Image 1 (cartoon, helix red, strand yellow):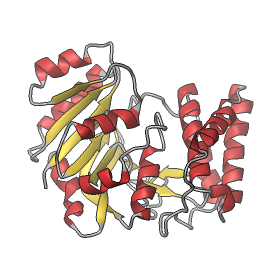
Image 2: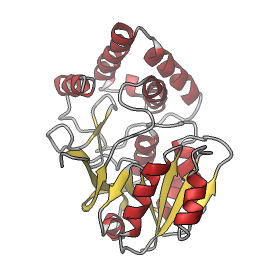
Image 3: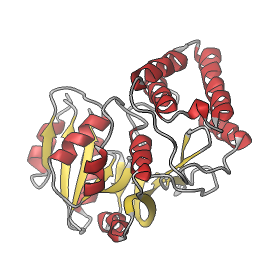
Length: 305
């Protein structure tokens, strides 16, 4: 299966260089496509001079994660679309391993495995969802639960399924695109598979950062958008969603004296309407992640380092 590796980036020249060097060392057949979100740090010059084998797509502005990925996908024609974050160092054989599950009938998504740099602990083995549609890095919390879909940082998609689904929804600037696409693919009858041999090290340096102002803004918008699009507040997970999101809003007010998480959710909710409402596909949610477990994970994510 031919593969296009798409890497969106913005002002992360040094990190991108390390990512591309790791991909160069991977003997898997592939085409690498870097989508530069109008970086001002010499990213385009680096790719052009040091990585002539890489296809560079230069955008006129910072269009966000989803739009950048869509632009990169359009620039390729591989049967498989592989997404890699610019702060992930893949191990040799990564691309071949992550596209392998796509050869099986009914599989349109595959999740790679990333570990945390310096510790070897699992960073993510795809995404798992609770009953309130909150997303978690699968495997990070000590329990490897039901795989809902891959994380956009280390993922593979069957191109034909991607194109029929329409790719990432460009209403989402960052966060939530992988969850939304995964749910749409599941609703179309496709399933996700684990590619445990597709490994990479997450070296960190993500654009937003956990609980940063930018993360609260972008994550809150995506959360409101998904809550409305998938009618979560009319589902059995409504109480859990309201509790968890209420705690997040309260945390923002108490610790950071900001209502950004609430305002961002309202903006996302409005942006999702009056579009089509979608039911949650069968099997996407892990019922084992109840209220107590969701609150435990929330507290852990916001615990000071």
